[in-house]
Length: 221
Image (cartoon, rainbow, N blue to C red; front, side, top):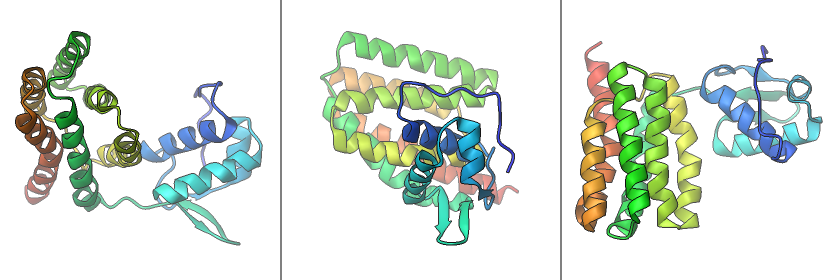
């Protein structure tokens, strides 16, 4: 089980949370590959923590569907099914649509400017072919909307789904396109104008469109 050595994790988090976030990141980006067996002692040494927070982190990752735990046998990374995009994006799109509907007409000028600036940077990354930066900025754009909705239940549900979206991106199931730039602009205007219906519809489409794009791409190969 190869473990990177040149990484940093926030020190103010609990040992369990640090372990959880780092192992999750390695699974998402493919550093820890599907079906790879995880050794809690090796992970503990790499992260500089005891085996207890590693085991607790693995239990959380198991609950999220990133690892499988076999009592008395071991723990391994789950496989990636690209077609899970049809299971992950629909509920996420509904949550994002609801968040947009809640905040339409209620955003401060500062928040609207944050959205506009983030989308401008997103557009630059897309046009430069920097898909990883674009992904981070897309996440940041939508996170502003979720945060402003100020609904902990929406936030918690979105946080549970987004890591799976990130993993699908790294495994080529999700591809960001220039269409998102225009959709973000329409969404910002709807939020600014207080147009709840348009804000909700565009937010939903912006996420669910990736499903059609995935299957279109599959047919072309």
